[in-house]
Image 1 (cartoon, one colour):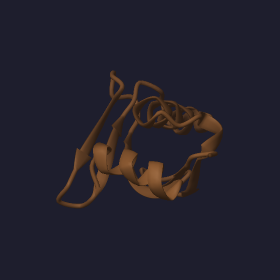
Image 2 (cartoon, rainbow, N blue to C red):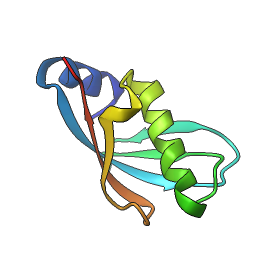
Image 3 (cartoon, rainbow, N blue to C red):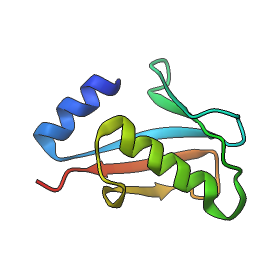
Amino acid sequence: MNKEQILEKLAKDSQIFINVKAFPSSGKHELVYKPENDTFLAKIKASADKGQANAEIIKLLSKEFSVIKENIKILSGKTDRNKLIKLWNSQ
C-alpha cells in the first residue's frame, strides 16, 4: 500500500497498520515504499540507541502521513529493524 493509498484509507477507515524497516544512522531522513514486500524503508539520522531511532521514525511518519505523533504506535519491533506500526486519525 503506497502513500496515497494509506492517506485514502486513513480518511475512510481511520486506522491502518504498516510494516516499516528501520535504517538508523543513515545520514538522512527518507521514507521509501517497497511494493514487492509491502514495506516502508525508514532511513533516519538518529542512532538506535535509547529509542532515538523509534522517535525519529514516528516523527517521519507523522510528517509523511499528516498524523499527529500521539496517533502513531509501534506495535512490534521496538528493538528490531522490522516494525509493525499503527496509525490512526482522531476524527
